[in-house]
Length: 92
View 1 (cartoon, helix red, strand yellow):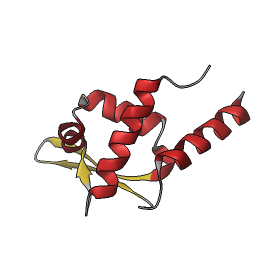
View 2 (cartoon, one colour):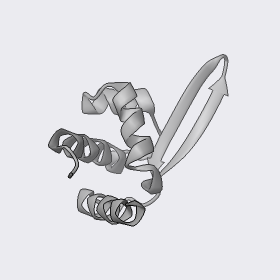
View 3 (cartoon, helix red, strand yellow):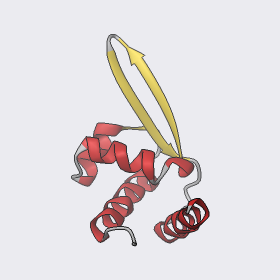
View 4 (tube, helix red, strand yellow):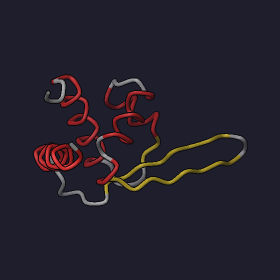
């Protein structure tokens, strides 16, 4: 069974926002720029984009912030999907 089309679109939107960003982005900022709920953004980052991002967890003034940026700005959706397909085959 392949990945749902709407999930692929969301991965693409998140990748686009991360590629455009000059610096670290907060989870809710990614959510705001993509129009995707922040919980969904978090799940997609953890489940599909983990290998492609750097994360920084800040805990200041009682606020927990998760900051994200791409390890490599040259990564694209096709590369991510190819990697995910390969990893899925390996884990089956």
